[in-house]
Length: 106
Image (cartoon, rainbow, N blue to C red; front, side, top):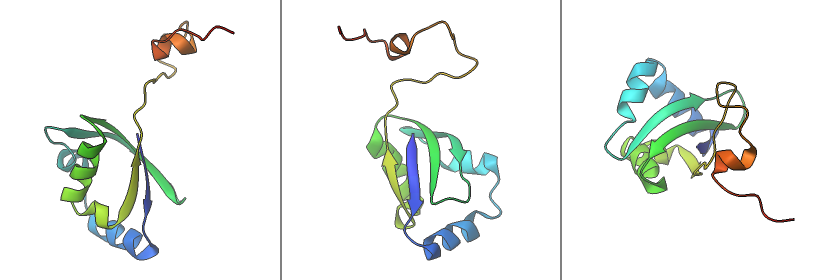
């Protein structure tokens, strides 16, 4: 998962102007290569927005964004997520089972 924020209001406006006619399909296609692939995107009216990536590593995400000029417009903080579950997951598993870890002895 990545957390993003624009460098400035001008950067946000430049991004919005460039993206105004880009379809969701086009966005996912241009952010896919041999090392990184955008899987989901969340953006509201707040300062931060979020993207779900499948990537070799953090650098692959940054390199993909930089190759499109987005590094000049936004800051990106990639974080590897070791666990994901939602309402469609096996909800009988414990938190630690999702992490494939054993709880620490208390």
